Amino acid sequence: MKTKAFTLTSVAAAMLSGAMLTGSCGSKQPQQQGMTAPEIAVMTVAPSTAAFESSYPVTLKGKTDIAIRPQISGFITKVHVDEGQRVHKGQTLFTIDQVQFQAAVDQALANLNSARSAVSTAKITEQNKRMLLDKNIISETEWQMAANQLAQAKAAEAQTEAALVTARKNLAYTTVTAPSDGVVGTIPNREGSLASPSSAQPLTTISDNSEVYAYFSFSEKDLLDLTQGGTSSIDASIKALPEVQLELANGTRYPIKGRVATVSGVIDNSTGAASARALFDNPSGMLRSGNTGQIIIPRDSEGVIVIPQKATYEVQDLRYVYTLDDNNMTVATPITVQPYNDGKNFVVTSGLKDGDRIVIEGVGTAVRAGMPIKPKTGAENAQ
Image 1 (cartoon, rainbow, N blue to C red):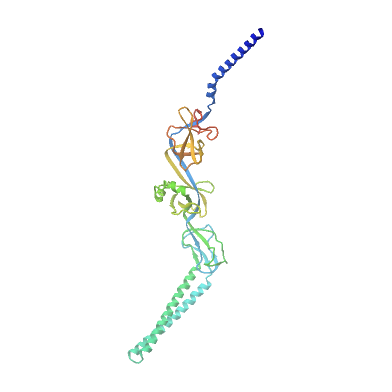
Image 2: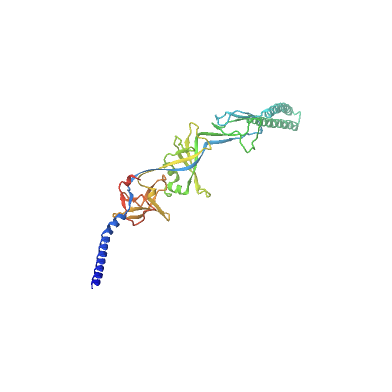
């Protein structure tokens, strides 16, 4: 009997202990659930001003790049300028051997003098024959022959005059001058080299770089964005663009701003882009044809919602953020953004409104939809 009583007592004690443990666990479960909500940084969105920039690679060309080619063939006897030198319109650049061309002028001039003498003789003969014809001393046929000889002499005179003009023009071509103000490019051929109009390489290039053109390309998507989906014309959209800047190859920015002047009306099928051109003043001549860099187009927007890029994630080409409801539960919210950004922030065009709270920490890693969180105090200042 004592043994049975001990067993019952032990069982009762075990049941009591289990009940106490169960009660203890039940009392702690809500507290543990409250502690599982992680502290995550959030921000409250509000309209602000966004100052973004878009950059495009450019190649610079002078306002005019004129290839200097000789009009006649001959050996270069003098190079009057040097590479990189600034020249003025009409300034002598090269001299080509003039000996043969001067001789051609002298020969043409002698031929012209001879032709003029022949005309004078033929004219006297024709006049005498006319007088004899008027007196019926000779026949009309004889006078007509003299008149024909005079006409032939005049034609020969005209031919020699044309030959003299050609010879003098060729002689003038031996002095190669600058067709406009500009800067001299490379000079591949020096004194003693043969210059010819058929040469593949020009004598040099004169670049008028008082203004320079910056050539770049707009993608088809850029054009659609520029024209607001085709609701405005290209010309109107270009005029509405702000002044642009030029970032040089060393990363510095050219101090004078320019403007986008033209956009090609044709999209290249091979590149899917349209050529565009911006114009920059170049009073110091610092910019040269062939320079490269980046054209910077500002994209300023006022009264827009700006959020950090790290607060977003993508699913099947759709962009989302996690917003918080009144119970601080995360909600996957689709948004759309502008195509232009600064690499750190997005301008939201739809999906968010003033006062919405979004998660800006752990998106794509620690945070998921339907998750309770504890908003981190002061997170708006730690974007």
